[in-house]
Length: 193
Image 1 (cartoon, rainbow, N blue to C red):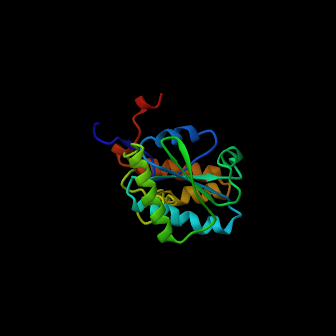
Image 2: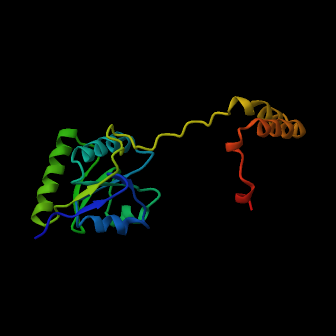
């Protein structure tokens, strides 16, 4: 048997829908996939979700977390026979493995993940998933809110004129900005066709 398979994924914790679940199910032949069925109205879901994500990251690509909003994806909630929310199941080699419902202590969650890896090894599921380096090692996603763009000081007069509805003044201010711009910053008219 060759080296364990490594598959690149966008994150170690991904949000999954009814429509996109098949791709995640296929990854369960590489690593155990922990499926967290949660809902925004569920206080236990709100407490459990970050803990499951943290433990997933601790296992460094040997486990993948698939978060499923049960309200938005009733087909998956029904398929996994979720009797309550949150419900946590796993997929190992495409087969569902019921884990638990409700909340559990983090130590017990780590033990479950270790047992899941042992089950995976028994079934030949010994690969890894590889997420980008900035994939929220602190438990948060790497996608920070973009900073609000800052208006350059030279453009403030034009922006303020436009905001107050004085478009003639705004155009005059923009033209003044363009006249003062260094030649290297002006658009080459050949590219503007």
